[in-house]
Structure formats: structure tokens, C-alpha cells
Amino acid sequence: MSAVTHPVPGLLQRAAPRALMAGGIGLAACAVGAFQNPTEFLRSYLLAFLFWSGVGIGCLSLLFIQHLTGGRWGLLIRRFLEAGSRTLPFVAIAFVPLLLGLGRLYEWADPVRVDADAVLQRKTLYLNPGFFAARAAFYFVVWGAVGYFLSAWSVRRDARQDQRLDRRLRGLAGGGIVLSGLAITFSSIDWAMSLDPHWFSTIYGIIFMVGQTLSAFTLVILLVSAMAQEEPFRRVVTRDTAHDLGKLLFAFVMLWAYIHLSQFLIVWHANVPEEIPWYLRRIQGGWKYLAWTVLAVHFLGPFLALLSRSIKRDLRRLSIVAAAVFVARWLDLYWLVAPSLDRPHLTLHWMDVAAAVGLGGLWLWLFARLLASHPLLPQQQDDLEPATAGGHA
Image (cartoon, rainbow, N blue to C red; front, side):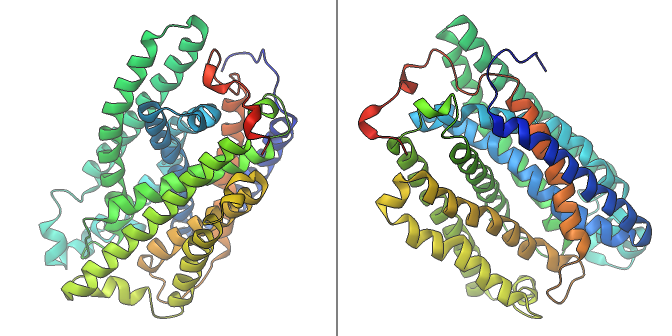
């Protein structure tokens, strides 16, 4: 990382060491738990990894959208998205413990269980440890390379004021969104759906894609709100930009609900024995209460709140909605994945929390360091001149 030659908001300076401390404590607790119960540790670690890697991948997806569509909203949060996408090469390192524990997590990685299951035997060409690791490496190479060049060219564009780099960025975003979309789809199948190798869904990858984008977007809204009164955001964060962020959040919340409903209706209407058990496990043993909680916090509450124009234009109230959705993102992921981890009843293991705090603390520390390595707003962008007509958010 380059030397910092620009003002860094006090929030970043204070938050980074605290996040590192929380991450260290959380992972130290997980290390103790791993000696006592390595299988439970790997399950908790997988849940935490899926969530925090999803935040970084979601940042990359939003970066593609911003470069392809433009808009003041995207310029305001571009540096946040670039910093989040640049964490992905480091997230690849965090994937190593899962590779080492494949046999404890996935049925298809246990030779004894494969020999006893005809369905798993027919899927060994795709579901085997070697090919699994190779695919994961490919995903991280795609995400890391595209994220690096999007960030590097963006910073170079500021330094050189070269308009040709805008076309190059749009071209990379156009190709990158296709490659990344495929990587997200297959990684969600590999890392989450294959926990239950007898079940499949063609919508599953899109559920993860939308969820990751929402995780990243809500986190960015929280950060913009927290730094709205600090330089350099004080002069550019207006009610109009808050309104843009609020409308996009409303759209993503609606899309999340539509995708989930689509999968449910397809499975319910088909009534196929191979598909129904996946939902049955998630509405029995207490899991239905979590499902209703996710529906209320992730969709119904935000939907009703974001119908209000005044809330969408008030960054502080918008951030409350974003915080609720961000928490609901973890709950939704937990509902999607945990029942496939040999948890017939709704339970929360202490390592679920410790792993989420541990990986989250390290991710946020790294994110803050990367964010502070460049100016927090793109330079030489006329669209970011203060818009006094809109008023401050």
C-alpha cells in the first residue's frame, strides 16, 4: 500500500485498531474451540467465511454496476467498493482452513460416504477435492485480477485525467460482470449448495449474488452515514445522493424477495421429492421462526420504511434501515446454510459468533487500511461538485 498523503477521517483511524483487536480475540477463541471440536469449528468458520467473503464480492459487483451505469451515487461510494474488492486476494488465504477440512464438511469429500451413496458416485467427476480446490483458485484469480485493475485504472485516471481510461474501465466492467457472475454462481454451488449434494436449484447462485450485493451496499451506506460530517464527504453528501442510495436499497430489497419467492414457488409447485426436503428442514425444528424473522427484518420492515421519500432522503434514518438489512443478511445466510450442517434444530453455537467476529474484525481492519491508501473520493469528477440545491443529508 502506498504512503498516505491525504486526510484520513478520524473514524477510520479509530476503527481500524479496534477491528483488529476484535478479530484477534474472535479467532483466538475459535482456535481454542477448534481443538475441542474441529467439526463444529469448521461449520462456524464456513458460515463466517461465506458472509464476509460475500461482502467483498458484493463490492466488486456494485463496482461493475457503477462503471456501466454511471451516476453520482456511484462516485460517492466508489473508493469504498474498490477497497472492498481489493480484500479478495486476502480472503483467498482465509479459504485454506476450509480446504483442509473438506472431509468434515462435505459428504462428497468423504470416500466412505461416497462409496455408500450411488448419487454421490455419479457426481464425483465434478464434486471431488482436487477439482473443488482448482475451481476455488480460479474464482479468486478472477475476482482478484478484475478488482485490482478496476481500482488501479481508477486511481490512474484521477492522476492522469485521461478520459480514455473511462472507456477501458467500462469495457473491463462489462466483461468482468459476466466472469464474476459465473464465478459467484459456481462458488455458491461448490461452497454452500454442495453441503446437501442430493438437492439442487438453478436460482441458488442468483440468491447469493443478490445477497452479497445487499451486504456490501448496506455496509457502504452505514460508512457514508458515519463519515458524512467529516471531510471530504461533508461537502458532497446531500439529500439527493442519499435519495439515490435509498432508491437503490429499495430496489435490491425487492429483488432479494422476488428471487427467494421464485425459488419457493417453483419448488412448491413442482412438489418433487428430491427438492421438498430442503425446505422442510428449514421450516421444522424452530427454523421457521428464523425464516419469519428474516422475512420481517430483511423485507417487510425495509419495504415499508423505504416507501417513504423522507426516509430515503435522510441519511441517518436510511442508515438505520441499512443496519437492519445488514444484520438480516447474516440471519438469511444462516437460514440458508446452517440446516445443511447437521443442525436439525435452530441452534446458535458460540463459535458461530466468534468466527463471525474474528473474520469480520480482520476483514474490516484490512478494508480500513486499503480505504485509507487512496483519496476517499475520485478526483477530477465534475459530478461530485457540491449540489447545494439538494441540501445536506
